[in-house]
Length: 563
Image (cartoon, rainbow, N blue to C red; front, top):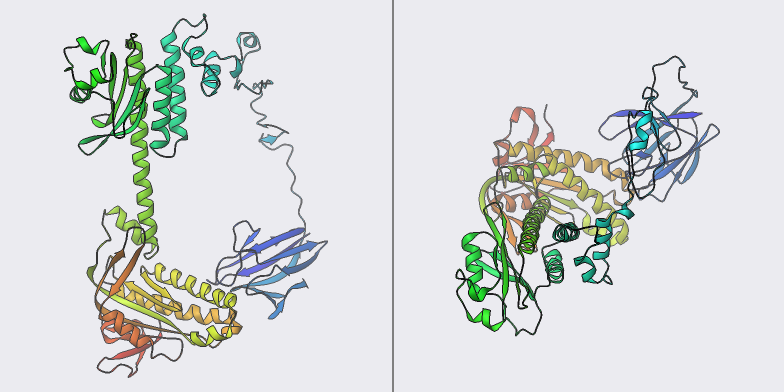
């Protein structure tokens, strides 16, 4: 038997839910069976238990407790008509529901049904299923009976190429075994190239950054093609900077065993440069590096995507066996993969940097403002002057509360208060500049402004005051707290200050000072505005009364919101 519970949320929306036999967990966390959001609801707040038509509730150690008929409750059996309060949600137990049984009509249209291991559709009566080996996958659909004899499933373990890739990843596999495939595979270069490309692609997919794949790829290429030297140089501005150096022999600190003449030729041609014998190659000027490292054969290929140069992959041999055309093609293929990986790594770096910048902005600005900044390509950086409305909120009685409450209870109060601040300020397009010990400064009109900034500031302030009154009902230990809010409009200087690693958003100017002074004069939960802000409002929509709080400045107390 199911029981019905009606729920009225803080926004006034009502709904009904069925509670079935067993446990129904309630809380703010999405993993709960019944999710209730908002102030005063813990992540795992309580649970309903339905057992044979009987309903009970157990509080799971929530911060603000569970109330049944306005009485704090840890565990209680419930009856129809009982009223519960969880956070700012109001629940009522309704009459039991009659159990209903749903049957599938025999004459209904064919529909999908479930077997133990597959989902089938009765209308697809020609589909055949077969038992497959675990190491192979085959899909068979709409097959004739006679066609089964022509099919062959080849498991992965029978693939020479896959087995070669597995051996390539085994550090105990001799490289000679990979360079000399079985007699049945006559295309040694193609075989070796495919295995190497497969392995390089796997390295690129697994790496988290450029160094995570460039160095392993250089090691792999050096062993597979028996190079004496492998150097990866990456383009940084107009320069080529060695990123990885592999050399069979001793090198002095800072020594890079490459030929400048060969690099210049590869850069000029923007194509792979290969020489069987550099000592007799007229394209390459003989230099000290060629003689010093006893270079006999060389391959250098640009790392390019389209017309963009990302670097050069350089290899040489000092042995009598020179590089073949097939090996040059192989190096060119590896270079193409390296260039793609470098471009992807750079793109990933830009994405990470943008996420960090977005994260920094979202600490202070609402998501829609941040989205607008990114869409327009705008920058929020150095301090800039804006015409804006400053909203200052300050918790009255907070100093006394610090002396009376335990740190954990005080933290719970501040958490709910700060959460309300973020919600109301961001919902009205404001930026939250500062939060400290119950003091908050919000700005409306920076970094982007509109002609309704004062309206949004007032609406945020009114919503905060109303929410704060409701919140105090959840804080019996903090019942003497009150929220003083004040607004002033004028010229402010606002923007980011500090280092890249620790940016802060700052706002300076008369509106900030005036709002702070005005808020300090409040003695109850109220919203005060100066004449400068009042002049930017549609005055017929608000009820106000003048209060003499600041010398030389006309001040109004808002007693009602938009009509």
